[in-house]
Image (cartoon, rainbow, N blue to C red; front, side):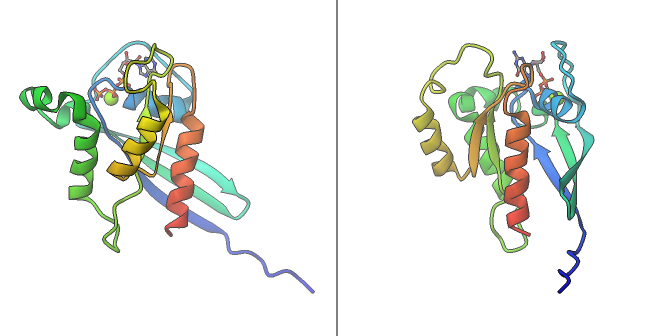
Length: 168
Ligand code: GTP
Ligand code: MG
């Protein structure tokens, strides 16, 4: 008996990369899409776009539209002082207040602790603290990443894509 021919599927997913000024959002995307890294910092103005095409498996192709959003767009210089130790949570809450999936649930969001090639400070010395933090704040997972050293760039992106796929 012949196996039924699997349906070939094409997906387009929109991925937002948000976070603090100079945290490495553009660098993450450049590394992921172009395998490039530069130490030169040029702040993103507004939003930039990049496209990455994944031959996910033999039956599916996934186009990722990466939105590289300027860190300076959000939270002006005054509020930054109040938010100091809580910026990540604020980004997350801001996101959840503005976008949800069609069923009303939050969009899947991965926390990236970038620049892990540099010496770590508290609270990043304590992985179980970050686990707990992500649970409390509703992140689906987190990674130490380095755009510079190409650490966990592919892995973190693939994790998010597989989570998005599960929600289709
Ligand atoms: P905005 O567009 O202003 O929001 O900044 P951004 O988050 O896009 O940061 P960007 O990628 O421009 O990087 C800022 C600086 O951090 C640059 O000098 C990068 O070279 C540096 N940088 C980015 N990622 C890493 C990393 O993984 N390790 C190290 N050591 N430096 C990094
Ligand atoms: Mg940028």
